[in-house]
Amino acid sequence: MTAALLKDRLALVWAGLVIATIVSVLVGHDHAALGQAGAVIVLVIALVKARYVGLEFMELRTAPRVLRGLFEAWCLVVAAMVVVLFLVGS
Amino acid sequence: MVDTSTATVTESDTDRGRRPRSRGRVPGEAGIWILVLSDMAVFAAFFGVFLVVRIGQPQVFAASRTQLEVPLGLVDTIVLLTSSLLVALAVRRVRAGRRAFAGRLLVAAAAGGVVFLALKVTEYSIVIGEGHAPSSNDFFLYYFVLTGIHLTHVLIGLGGLAIARSAVRRPVPSPDLGRTVENAASFWHMVDLLWIVLFALFYLVA
Image (cartoon, rainbow over the protein chains, first blue to last red):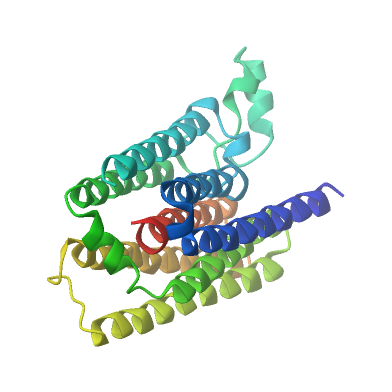
């Protein structure tokens, strides 16, 4: 029962990640129309996806606080860094 | 080394008067997380350098980006995501004692990695065939170097999956089997995670 739920959860996460990837490509394709906002959306989606890979596939959701915290800090810092550096360079 | 492979860890921690809730469970060994987090830190620096180099020449980067094969990159991403899912499922199957099934999942996941390698070789040959090289401009320099370093990680990850599979197939499983598979899985998920950011940066945004 628990195993089935876990399996379903993983499959759901996978489906969400694939949909987010396709949305990113569509937004990236309309980059010109959406301007810088489109690029920022794509970057934020990428780091949210990375976070889900970590929390669900890497099982960091149930990891010790230090490990999960380091991972989530990485996602947050990288997201902030790429968005700021992208905007500065545009 | 603290045994992190079973739920009894929480019990023994409670016995010692620690706060079990704040401890949680480390997948695999501590060592693999030092490697994974260091690699992630290095790649974070790479992402930063790429965008800093872009600051003086956004038009060059924008024009170069459109030369990349977005459909191939999209397929790359979905292949790695699927491969990651298969590895996560294999970890669950190992815990459930279904080692034969876990072995098949690991082989399927590794096949995804091989497909990724083949797609990358195809992509490089297309990009080079169109006359682009690391010496063309800063965009292509970082494109070849960073996707190349990532590809090296794919190869290392495939080695990890091979080790996990041979451990799963042993007639008498080692008591460390769970952790061996989790180590390989954690590295493989990192390869997936780093590609997600590379794909967004190089193919969709720059």
